[in-house]
Image 1 (tube, rainbow, N blue to C red):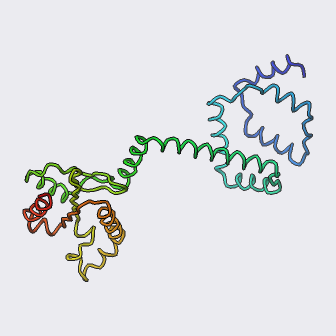
Image 2: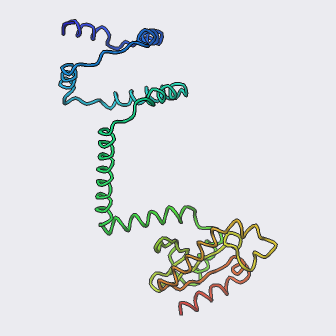
Image 3: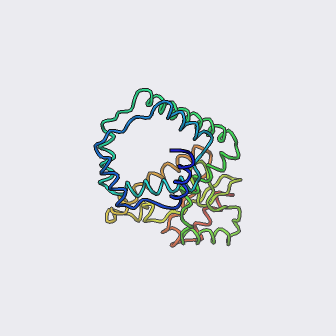
Length: 250
C-alpha cells in the first residue's frame, strides 16, 4: 500500500467509527488465528514514526473512558484476567517496575524532607492537622456560655481553640499558660453525673476518656495549668467557676 493510498484511506475514515456489529464480526473472524509477529524492521519503523510524539489530553481522556466502559462489565474483567493468567511477568520487567517504584519513593521522600525542613511549612501543616482533627465542629452551646462568662468577667486574654502539639485547647491564656477545658457531662463521662445507672454513656465515650487523659498528661508535662469546668458545675454556679479561673490567674 502506497503512502498516497494510506493517506486517502485515512481521510475517508476521518470521524467514522466501526459499528459494534462490525467489531464483533472482525473479532469472530480473528479468533483462533495466530497473528504474525512484527519484524525488527517493522518495530523500528513504528518507533521512528512515534518518536517525539505524545498523546493529547483529549486522547488520553477518551482512552480512559473507553477502558472504564469496557471493564465495567464483570465478564470483560474476567476475560482480561483469564488472558493474563498464562503470561507471567519476566524478571527483566519485574526489575524495571521495582526500580521505577523505588525511584519514585526516593524522590517523594527527598521532596517531603525538603518541605518539612522549612519551619513555616511545618507549623502550617501541624496547624492544619490539628484543625482537621479537633476543630471540625463549632464550639458547643456550653462552651459559648463559658466564653461569654469569661469575657463578661474581664478575663479577655483567653483565646478559643488554640492548637498545642496535637491537641486543641478550648480556651487558653498563652502568656500565662493557663487552659480552661469545657466538658459536657455526657460526652466526657463526668465521674459525678455518670453513675452506675448511666453505664451506656461511659461505654459510648470510652474514646473521649482516653483522649482527655492523654491531653491532661501532655499539658502537665509541658508546664500548662489546667482548669476543667464541667457542665453540672457551670449550671449550678457560674460565678464560682469564674472565681476558680480568676484565682489561678492571680
